[in-house]
Length: 327
Image 1 (spheres, rainbow, N blue to C red):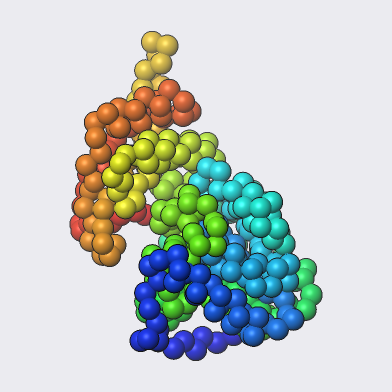
Image 2 (image 1 turned 60 degrees about the vertical axis):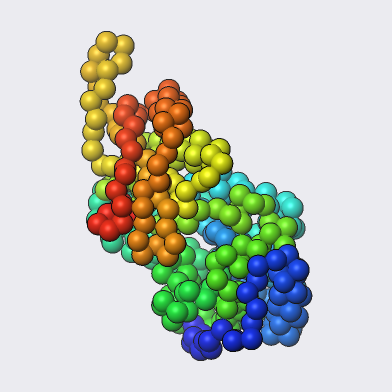
């Protein structure tokens, strides 16, 4: 793999806060990409997150089908996300997109694994294996694009902690292409909007690298994971209707059973826990006060439509002592 040799953000670089500044940045980066890549081919791991999506759109604008995007569905994405990646990039932008359905491979490996760090390592290791397998099918690819942004450089010397392919085997000797490496997240979003990406992709909430794998607390089971995916979609839809939305909102399903009553009989189900927080820097966070009407709407929809769930809870803990994520 290529070595990381990062400079600091140029002091003269203006903050990208408007469409006009974003368009100027896009024009400049398209030129830089063409200069770096020449007539070469580029490979990108496209997760569907903000950073990789903006990089993909930039590269498509610069070099078209000489970019190959690989989207790995590990079964831990939110509802509708793999379909959105295919619709936006293959159908709308005409990207050369390779879709890999690796759901069974990931979930089989995760079966019975309860420790969060072990889950993270399994997910990261299999992702690299799957991505490397797809990379071997391609010829004459000399460049690897990554959605590195400036906080990644400041915090981890350029190596992203998740869905980063910096751990590819030594047989790959790619030169890195990182067109947004000097941008902060808010600037990346402005650029994404200027590139025409949909708002629900550009402004999507922070999402952990292991995805729902760390929100399905404890050992992941397929039925509990699917119930989490459906409940999470309801939570995001209902809270998303509020005029003032919290910085992040989602739900988790703890690895515990909850007694319920159905058809006059007791049964064991699961509890869904709603989490909504506001933060400036993610170092500290305060619980967001969800209106009672919204909580009631969430409760009714989840209980009525999500299999296996018989209880809805609201986590009002601040950070510290609680972290934003449960695992």
